[in-house]
Amino acid sequence: DMGGMVKAIEFGFPQKEIADSAYWYQKAVERKEKIIVGVNAFEMDHEPIPTLKIEDTVAKQQLARLKKIKKTRNNSEVKTKLLDLKRAAKDDQNLMPFLLSCVKAYATLGEIMDALKEIYGEYKEPITY
Image: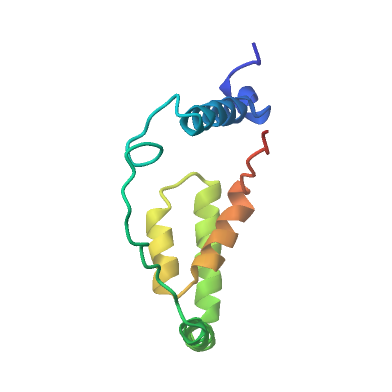
């Protein structure tokens, strides 16, 4: 008994159980003890699937657009809307109206996430082996 599910998660117990199960499942697939059609038995030859490659120019264009938006938007309004979002998060309110007002003021996804991380923190999954 670990004292409940929250404590078990803090100790990394469920993650370890999932990792162990996935490990043994994969071993069974690789040894062909577990047959998966198309993976380890009855495989067909096929052409490689083409992957989307985005040129550096596209990334540069997006960064230029972002820079322009940050330069031309009302930054004091963005700051106010982000503060409103943080207050709403602290007060456990419905965040959707506040998120929409941030977006309408041209707050970036990164700015919105940073504001929410200040209130909620950021989950870091424990490493399990």
